[in-house]
Length: 241
Image (cartoon, rainbow, N blue to C red; front, side, top):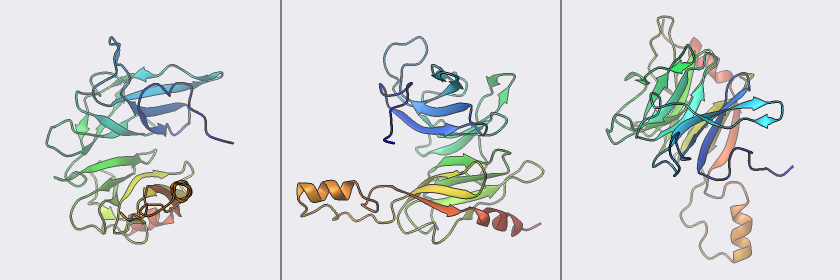
């Protein structure tokens, strides 16, 4: 079946949809007009739509406590409704990962995750386990394998986070891996990779060859990959006591 534009989309730039663990809500970033305005937003904010018997409800802006004048993108949601996302909120010139807890139906002011996760480089694209026991994200920090690697951090019993672990080869490559997502049953990790990037890949091609190349995998643009997620439990078990 060919893909269809979602009923609540198609008019403004909407970015990275993320289902709540129970599948009843869909979170995404958008530049659509914020409440009280009629023109599109100057940066991305986080919105949410609920699944109804007849389709999806009108999206709801998640408020100006969670959203700021800076872009809030790549939301990820836990079972309690806590949202993890990336933002430039502190205006330091790079993306960091923040979280905002849901309390009595209201999102609390976002908190920046600690230095075990955030650095002076870009961190983003978070996936949060439904029980918030671990976080997978991408970062371009030094010391990695490629331009952007996937990392994981585990939440300890006292609520602090472990030092980040690079997911290593063959998941990470000398190019960029981004936007991780673990399936609802916890068995598979899906992510985007630019592992076959070649700046000359499109040179000297006919129009027909270009179209065939553009519509094929491993063409230099992002390609979706998946891998069994058994390694997550193995990494957790290898953490020092």
